[in-house]
Length: 147
Image (cartoon, rainbow, N blue to C red; front, side):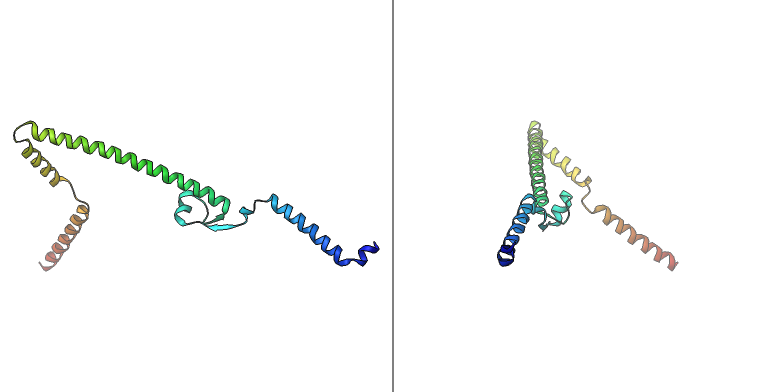
């Protein structure tokens, strides 16, 4: 006991070292990556359902999910292009066979496709027609007011 009173600095240093050792042992058992938060981009946050601010561990899981979803999307797009190629080949073959199989086939196909093109609505046609109709109604109301 006398030694402790005479060596207060040594005892203090020893106590701090023991407490530091206990603290480090406790921290080693914890997942420190759960304490560090990172910002998650909105696109990743929306796609994975993770918070916009998450721990490193959660961010890694979200990144893996996001990458896997991107790979699946890329495979799906690739499959779509393969189907598109097959359909285009089939259509081109049909046009070639139809155009050369009988006399005047090329002219008949051109007329058929031209007629089909006239019947297909272009994007925005319905809005343009509605706007034109609304203008006509307004003009009709003005004429009716004059009479």
